[in-house]
Length: 233
Image (cartoon, rainbow, N blue to C red; front, side, top):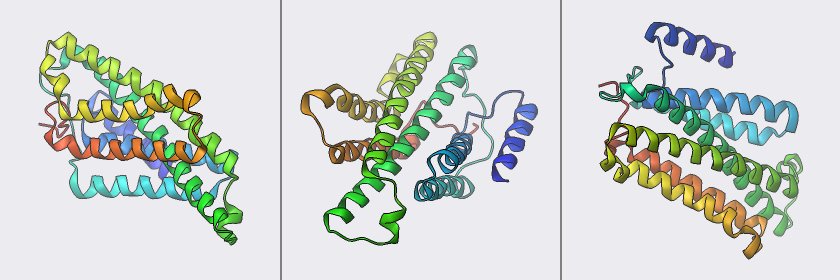
């Protein structure tokens, strides 16, 4: 039902604004919630992992609450960026997809660490029995990170093309760009050193969570960003 309401809402706003509603923090989190719901459907039907679905829904709910409490509902293309309108749309869409993928990675990584600790302490309960195996959660975490990383790289390349096309090179030092690069470096460093260091699944889970924390800080930095203050003004 929520999924249908979101589709209708996006469709109505697209018709009214004659463009995809993407250029505000509200829109970003709205689309993110939409993607997380899609992923939740897939996990519920294919992977049949109740706790992952629950955690994703909680994150999606928090994003919607954040929208209602803090973010404006309308946003427009930032002034002076009309010539790269299409590139900015691609940038935001790819950024949304990558963040959703990293959210999934962080969820399964957290579940992995929880189950690993429970098994190490030899504590068996109904929660442990309902969780996927450690091997499955390791696979899901790795796959989500593997999807999110190249998508984020493409998003950053598109953003760089937008900045270069507009000649606004000073924005390369923008706080949000810096935090995004730091988060990306965490994931790239993991993949680059994985075979050499032969990381355990436990270590991989910690890398996934560390990268996700940097993404959260990335959104906090939005208020200091000259490039990403999508507030409709």
